[in-house]
Image (cartoon, rainbow, N blue to C red; front, side, top):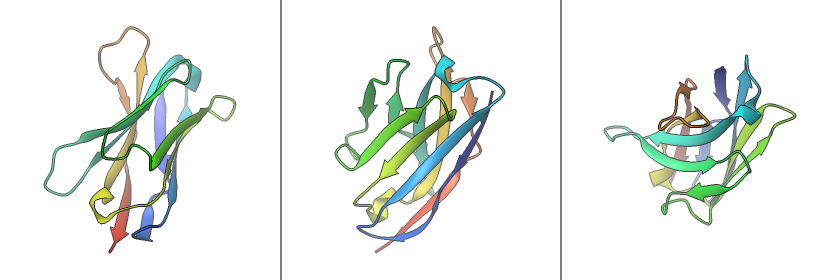
Length: 117
C-alpha cells in the first residue's frame, strides 16, 4: 500500500489544521493507522492511532486537541488538529500496520506543519 499525507501548512498558534492520509494499492480497512511527528532535532514520536474497529489512542501532548478518524469508503485517515501550539511544529507522517504485525509497516512521505507563535 502507498500512503500519501497532505494538509500541512503554516498556521498561527490557536488555529486548526486537518491532515489527510490517503491510501492506494490496498483498502485502508486492512490496516490500523497511526500518525507520528518529528520536530527539528528530535526523534519521531507517536501522535495518535486508530484501530480496525475505530478504537483510538493519543499521546498525552495532544489529547483533547487532536482527533484521529478514518473513512474507509474514501480510503483516508484524518488528523484534526485544534488549539495548535508552537511545539506542535513538525513533519507529520501517517503509517499503516497490518493485523498481527508488531510494527508499522508502511509510511507516507510526511507533511510539514508549522505553528507560529
